[in-house]
Image 1 (spheres, rainbow, N blue to C red):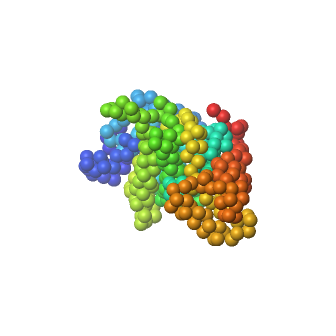
Image 2: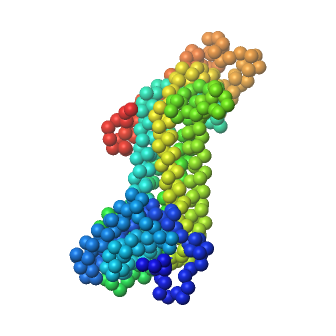
Length: 462
Ligand code: ARG
């Protein structure tokens, strides 16, 4: 075997080194080697079914493919400077082992259908690892939520004190978002479980291969419906990146909460030493670098989606070499999200919350203003009027440098709320919000049960 490329018959000259360098994808697509071996074994069996190789020959092809795959995995495969990509390297390795028989392997297939087959297999496996990471993060949230179903904390809007909620309710808001990410990933997987193999370069082949049987061998749900679509489209990659970018956004918001809650000026939670970072200069520091990086990586995921989308837009149908640019964003996105999930899940699992600090913050009277207005509503006052009355009360007390807690029984009665002082209580406020989906302890427990049921296993436990 020479250094000549796979198509050298038609060419009088070898490619220029710079042209070769620009086109070489081996540096990153070598990750597809295990998938390329599986797809090639299935293709060898398809050649056997079509009577193009004997069963013994198909067996030899399979053995050689697996040897090459093992050699690549353990680092002993001798790559050639002329190996353009993983597909050509593996085919060369097989041909070097089997001579003429190896040269039969590529009948009826193209790297165009092969590369998409490999990539779909790779992405489906990555999606299942990502799914496990999401489940771990959800379980961490559910464990804390059950423990803090009754922990009152100030809920905020615009990052300003709004109404009392429970910590469990707040944490489960993140969990529900992550559950939807799982759902999106599952729906994407179902759509992506399509085998392109047999589509060839664009128009299938004359060799009477059976794509459905190949799909079945590779564990895909079905084969392609249109060979041009099978080699041209990259929406499976694009949608994968979109789904994981959304998940990354959710994680970034969870991470932002971790950074905020563990800010010592708030003091609502502490980071475990294993998930905190020190400063090279300031001995006092325990920084939330894990949370900050998890927050920042969402931008990178969006970058991966943007890079691929800009490559695809306006590209006419059929394979173009532009499509080779799908793999780096796909790998980068999957790697990024996997590492964020693992670190952030560990960080959340090991958080220690400080209910007393939250309770104390929830003493702020402003948090109960809406409850006062709603108490008036229950006694028949129209809401707008109730809102105005409470607003005026707060304005007057502020001018008098007084607090709501100093109101006398008579003043409460004048306000239309005899005995209203009891309303200034966090436990009461969250229990009073007893409707499903609300912050009450019973709602938090019901949500945690529902999430555990959705995860389809026993109760989330440490
Ligand atoms: N390395 C290429 C890719 O990743 C394989 C397909 C090459 N096909 C071609 N017609 N040049 O897309």
